[in-house]
Image (cartoon, rainbow, N blue to C red; front, side, top):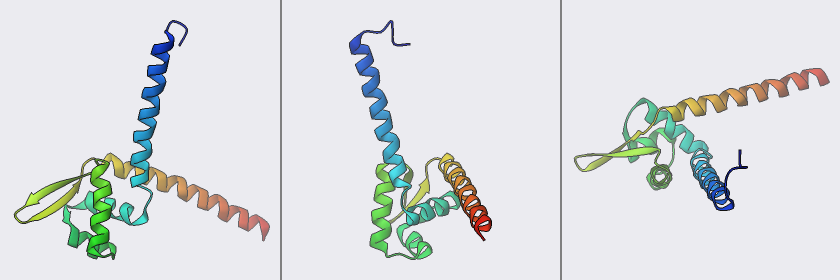
Length: 121
């Protein structure tokens, strides 16, 4: 695959792959908080403002704002101006599909652990 490419082309490909992996890691870091995961699921169902999200998640409004800032910076939610208020919506529902897939993996892991405990009993 790389035989016909020059050293500089290979370096550019490696740099591009590294950049893609860094962007991937940034998205994953936004998913690495249980409160943000809950916020993603809420926003998949409906648009909501900071106060609504804070109340539904059970956190303070400043904490919800900090989470939304991370989600916005990663391009995962979109702010929508509604008069004096700003509502947020999920930008791409595939994010929920990805979270659901991860939950499926988690479910399988938990089942495997439960099976191991039964073997030990």
